[in-house]
Amino acid sequence: MPSLPETRVKRSRTFEQVGLDYMGPLSVKSITGLVKRWIALFMSFTTRAVHLEMAGNLSAENFLHVLRRFIARREYPKLILSDNANQFQLIFKTIMEENANFLATKGFGDYGIIRPIDFISPMASLDLPINYDSDQDEYTSYTIKTKDKPVKYWTSTLSTLDVFWKLWKEEYLISLRERTQRELTSPRIVEKRILHENEIVLLNEPKVPRGVWKLARDGKIRRATIQLPNGKQIDRSINMLYHMEIDATKDREENVDDEPEEPIAQ
Image (cartoon, rainbow, N blue to C red; front, side, top):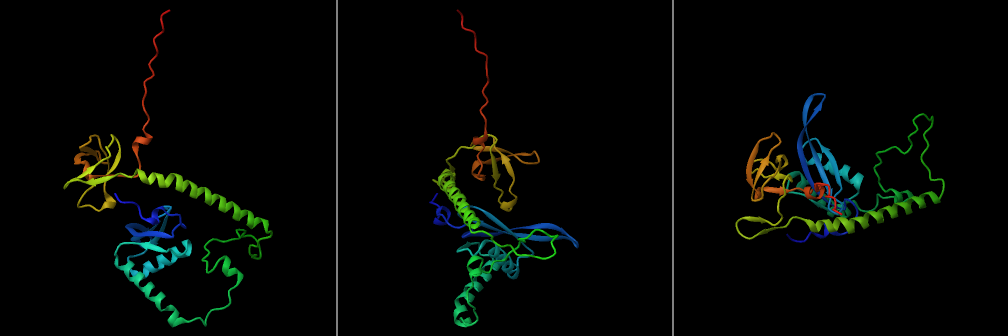
């Protein structure tokens, strides 16, 4: 298996490089009855954080609103990796063309002087109220009363961030080395890692979408007996089983029989 790309192992801002795909459709109950909804899934390559946005349909216009809401919450990503869906390609192509022609067509005459607030939260889309007291007669904006408070908060945030990146480097990157290795030695794919009894796996079904593959447990090594959720058992080759990112052997407790020791004769 080749090495992971730089976007997976290099320290960067969360959601700076993301993967994008749609999940669904899901049936949602509304006032008019059951309707179909999709979920746009954004995953950060570096931290594997996940951001979900609901999509009413698969049109390019709806995806543009989904992308706008994502950017308003997570800032602009430097890289978006997706499949060749029509709505993705149309919006990305439109954005690239608009950015290329922006300076030539718009110019700089319509922009005002930059204010101090523009450096603190430039064009931020706030979705949470700062003042939670609904009983007051007059709304007053939140103000920072002392200089020490924001400095203390900023220092604490940096310390917490350093701890996170330390764990990310020492634990997460090392865990990526423990990926299951597959090698192609013949027309068959040979699995180096031996399956264990009662390990949870995914069952490959050629004519069924991957999202609805059944979970199963194997009891043999070369040819596994699979138990489906409905209790039915079928036989499949281990080359049709795919490991999930959980290892049953780590959580398995060794059963040791505590037998009483025989007394020593004196």
